[in-house]
Structures are given as structure tokens and as C-alpha cells.
Image 1 (cartoon, rainbow, N blue to C red):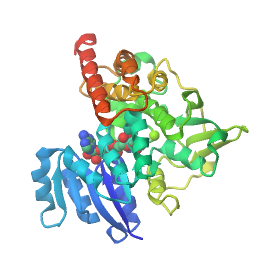
Image 2 (cartoon, helix red, strand yellow; image 1 turned 45 degrees about the vertical axis):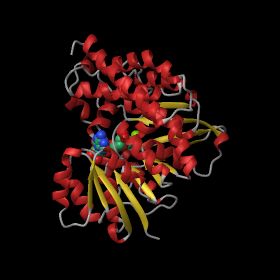
Image 3 (cartoon, rainbow, N blue to C red; image 1 turned 90 degrees about the vertical axis):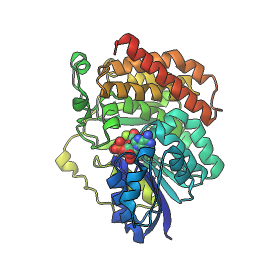
Image 4 (cartoon, rainbow, N blue to C red; image 1 turned 180 degrees about the vertical axis):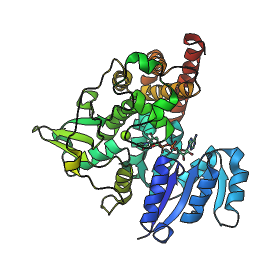
Amino acid sequence: MRRKISIFGSTGSIGQNTVSLIQAQGGRDAYDVVALSGARNIPLLAEQARTLGARIAVTSEPSRLKDLRAALEGSGVEAAAGPDALEDAAAEPADWAMIAIVGAAGLVPGLRAAESGATVALANKESLVCAGDLFLRTCAANGARLLPVDSEHSAIFQALNGEKQEEVDRIILTASGGPFRDWSREAMARATPAQAIAHPNWDMGQRISIDSASMFNKALEVIEAHVLFDLPPSCIEVIVHPQSIIHSLVGFRDGSIMAHLGPADMRGAIGYALNWPDRRVLPIERLDLAALARLDFSAPDEERFPALRIAHDVMEMGGLAGAIFNAAKETALDGFLAGRIGFLDMSALVEHVTQTLGRDAAACGADYALGEVLEADALARAAGLAWMKCDVGA
Ligand code: NAD
Ligand code: MG
């Protein structure tokens, strides 16, 4: 059966890998591509839309509509622009939708895809951090299947295959430790964006690479796991594993641990979500365990990486504390990229905003609406900007 598919954020790192896998699996001859979306890279978006024969191509930036129209001239692909057009494209019926937009901007398109009843392959972990309860509720109400794409969560999802939830003891998320794994606090305080982007193992978008260096990525992932796998915070652990070969582990009540291994190549997790519940041949390297020879592990250092501690506070608070946390983190990251604050100031800002606004935002419990998520997000961004002005004088 030909499947109708859409890819939101198709021009990014996950999006391009998704397009390449779809191409490898027959491209437009095998799939009906409904919609693709990007932001600024119009030439790439147009090229992808032409190659895959997409029905609609959307840029999130209204000012780029003219360029997109010009680039799609004569192709038969409909061009659209702006957040509303993106929302409409996500609401178009599809069997499978990849949400690979970065940041809280991925939330609304993801919800619209879930409302359409599509199988949602979710790379955008921020949606689950900001509004996990709303996302799960929306999927359940519309019969939408949610498939994790984050490598750790795909690993856990695979390790849980055929297992009983009540027999799960704990989840162990692996973290590479990023480029600053062995740096001193003093050196980290002086780290530049270019140093933070240079991830040792994974080739990813700029923002997630910096989040990996600060371990905010792992903090988001701990919350993501809490939402996806319905386990209390005390059952979610993080272990530093510099080789990034074990993508995560599940511990069961009999003491057994199931680990998922593979090369550090996102096409593994994307391909699993694309072909689920089947497995197809994927163009990824096969592991040579003898050549690897060893796998190392160590406990994360919460002194240099406070993000994990903050994530635990956020989970304990519940409600919309995650929306506060994520927006504060995005604001801090913008400040760091713009040279307004230092690397370690990011966690100071996030901790301050989360402690100041988190409890109030948590008061709604699990029963909140999208409008409240967006309000919490805006509040935290304003508080983050205010912190930058006062505490750093930036
Ligand atoms: P990226 O920056 O490479 O790509 C982001 C995509 O989102 C691009 O298509 C961009 O045009 C689009 N975009 C950016 N801002 C937007 C906005 N405001 N509105 C609409 N679209 C916008 O990011 P990425 O590394 O591919 O990551 C995408 C998502 O997947 C993130 O949530 C990330 O945490 C998650 N993820 C990525 C990886 C990875 O290996 N890259 C691994 C696991 C999870
Ligand atoms: Mg991950």
C-alpha cells in the first residue's frame, strides 16, 4: 500500500536524513508525499519538494514565500508560508508524519498531525517537554500512534518490544558527555559556540549540538522519557557513555538489562520509525564489536552539568513547568549564540527562571490547553531576557 507521508523540518539534519531514507526506499514511486516544510533554506526545500513530488511545500517564514514560489515554478508543487500555513499543512491527512522542526515551534504542527490521526514520528522532543500531557491526550483522542525518533527513546521503545510495563524497573539513558566531558568548570565558562557545536560522535543541528555540550539535551530527554514511558523520575537514570554505541537500556525487575546498540547514525532510529512495525534494510554501517573492543561508562557530573538536576525539579513540579524550562533553555541558548551570555550562564538562567515560574506553571496539573502552554512559554522567554539584562548586563 502506498503511504501518504509528510516531513516537517525536512531541511534540517533529521529532515534531510528522513528524505534520504525515503529516497532509498523508492521515493515518489513508493510514497505520496503530502507536505514538506522548512524555514530559511528555500533552495533545498524546493529541491526536496521537486524530487519527492510533494503536494505542498511550506516555509515558516512569510517573507520567503516569493522565493519559494519562484523556486517551485512549473513544478506543480503548491507553495505556502507562515505559521498558519504550516499548521494547515500538518492538518492535511497523512498516514505518517515526521516532526523534525527544532524547538517549541514544533509543538503546534505536531499536535495538528496527531489530530489528523497520522502516525507521528516525533524527533521534536521539545513538544513532549513543553506539553507532554496534551500531546499524549491528543494522540489518544485521535487514534494517532506516537513513535519516538530520538535515538535513546527509539532504543528504549525497541528494548520494550513485547515486554510488560509493570516489569520495568528503570530506564538508563546514555549520554556521550559531549565535547566538554572532561573540561574544567573554568574552561567551560569560557567556551565559545564553535567549541560547543563540535560534537564528538553525532552530526546534528546547531541547537541540539550545543544542548548536548551543556547536557540540556539529556535533561530534555529525561523528561521526554518520563512522558513517553510513564515512569516516575526516580526510575530514569543517565549514564555517560562516550562511544555512543549503546543508545539506551531498560532494566527489568528480575535484574536483566536490555541494551540497544548501533552506530551513531540517526538513520537507524528514523528508519525504525519509518518502517515500524517492520524492519527494512537500512544503509547504515554494521557494528564491528571486535574493532570497538571496549565500551566505557561513568556517572554524570551534576556540578559541571546542572541541567540534569534541574530536569528532576521540573518533573517533580509537573504541569507546565516543562514549558517554562524549555522556553528558558531556548532563550538561554539564543543568548549564548549571540554572545550575550557565557556557556555556564545558560544553566544559571534556566535554573533561575524555572525556580521563579515553575511552581505557578505546575499548578494546572496535567489538564491544560494549548493556549496555556503558549502563555507559559512567553512568560519564561520574557523572564529569561530580563535575567540576561540584570545578571550579566548583556
Ligand atoms: P535542524 O536545526 O538541523 O533543523 C530544524 C528544522 O526545523 C529545519 O528544517 C528548519 O528549517 C526548521 N525550523 C527551524 N525553526 C523553525 C520554526 N520557527 N518554524 C518552523 N520550522 C523551523 O535541527 P535537527 O538537529 O534536525 O533537530 C530537529 C529536532 O530533532 C529537534 O527537536 C532535535 O532536538 C531533534 N533531534 C535531533 C537529532 C539530530 O541528530 N539532529 C537527534 C535527536 C533528536
Ligand atoms: Mg537523543
